[in-house]
Length: 144
Image (tube, rainbow, N blue to C red; front, top):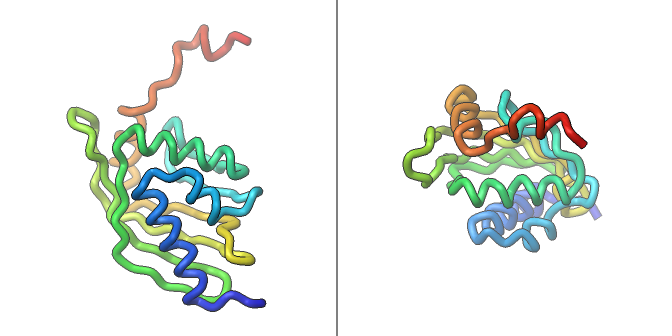
């Protein structure tokens, strides 16, 4: 049975509710096992996450960094949802971020199969993620 735009928006709203509650099990429930999640920028968490485990690890780290998301808008058709939200950190003393984000989700069979993040201020996002996630020193990164 084909998903309606309303069905697809509900999937993403369920994702936001699970994220707000830091409920990784509920986040997993709205994602396909082979989900792909594209994180823009040049920072330690950027790139394409492949599979539910990588995506859940990413969201676990966002919780540690105090990153919050407040939805502003949802739009959808029978395959895609677009959300616009305010994304910010509650961590004091960090290089903070408080900007608008848009995500494009592809939905199949009631699950998120792909998501692409877009930031209104990628420079602020890069600075924030670098302030929260440092790379290990070179000898540790290069050793087995």
